[in-house]
Length: 384
Figure 1 (cartoon, rainbow, N blue to C red):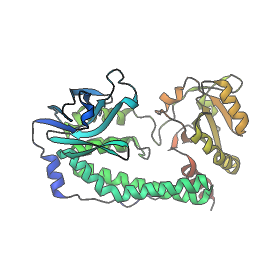
Figure 2 (figure 1 turned 90 degrees about the vertical axis):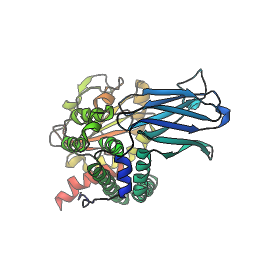
Figure 3 (figure 1 turned 45 degrees about the vertical axis):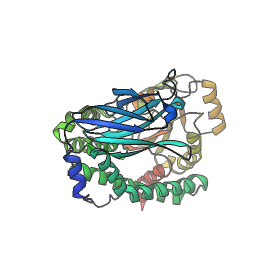
Figure 4 (figure 1 turned 45 degrees about the horizontal axis):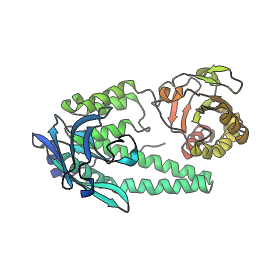
């Protein structure tokens, strides 16, 4: 697929000045919330270092709360209001919002719009710079969202595979443009806390092709940002991330329907590219993908395409019943201990990875139209 031409997006000079020249001193997070929350506990966490790090806490008083502290560099934080003092674990008893904090004041105003609790954020040099960047991105992001909805309706609801694959290709191009804008911003604003947040988004995007790309991205950040907790975490990810195109698929042990154990690496057929499909019987998106997998397997298997299904079902009966119901022609295995989650750096299903016969990763998130596009490129276009 041809990558879009590189673009340099120049944001207003005032935006850069506000971000780079934030005054030194402590941050203040001022909250305006319903008075019925009087006395409720509020905790501010830094969430950009790989875990939730408590920074400050207070209680609601007179419909307000105030959190204060000092940060060496801008950080991505999360304010959490606990509505039940006896239950801090349930999502139903807490309300949270994310905010970028630096050495300026941010105001968070509660807004229960259409019954959905949310906060409107204002102030703060880094927070406003991020909001400005999002506004600059809004047209492109909106186009992506609308096209994705069209893709779902086309590929899945109408089962129009060919047009769905074409839409997946267009979505890939839009995603590359979005990534390009983020990388251009990071390159142009190495001292900005916004760049640190955008770098985190880029690192976690499956479209990033190589480790060299990640290393270069982290190198664009200013030294103090690289030395921050978030910067060090990103640098570690850039060094250790396994699931990258061109990388080697981690091996693991899986169990066949007869109870025999196998190494995944031994299941890759010579001369074939293989889709490793992590799924579960109870996962409706997984089951919705199966009709197209049948079509792709029937069309391309004799030409060198294979599928290895790995279920994470912990109940063997549920897995076996799904195999009987779906009648999938490709080989199936079980991973009841869910070792694949850690091995493949994921926590959700379906997870679909296309690899070559040596187990080198060709494509991540190879589902639906994206799998179809990859197979067309590999088998149809090469024969023309």
